[in-house]
Length: 161
Image (cartoon, rainbow, N blue to C red; front, side, top):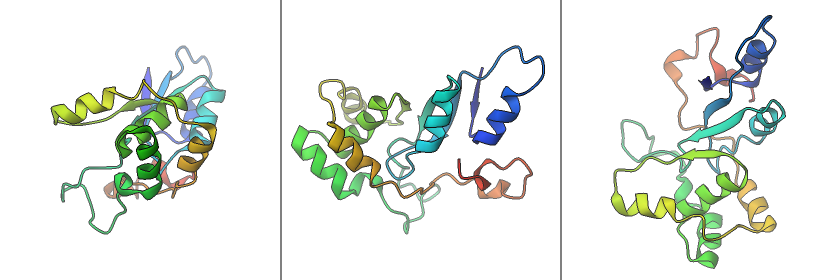
């Protein structure tokens, strides 16, 4: 059983249910270098819940989804710098960062070349220093806010994680 966009309080509510037969094995959340979800990852790891991240590269530039005022993860200078060192793209650095943290990634692409690139993240490793550098660009910035649900009593993003 998996859940999506549950914050730690919502997960805790489920885990404390009396006679719980099946606990969630994964929580799918938005996660990328600008929203690294370190606290959620630590919490989920402590409960043996796998974090599955959607939008690991930020979000598309499609105007239906993207505010042009939002920062673009893949334009980040730190990701570009690390990518140049490994001869990899910023996207590959962002994906490798998640994999090294034990996060399952679901990159979305319709472009065959990018799909191939997305698979080419297992022939290198980021150093501890590079991992810390990517951690350092976290902004706690969420692209997928689901603003239409902010008044709902179970809206998950009012809590920090």
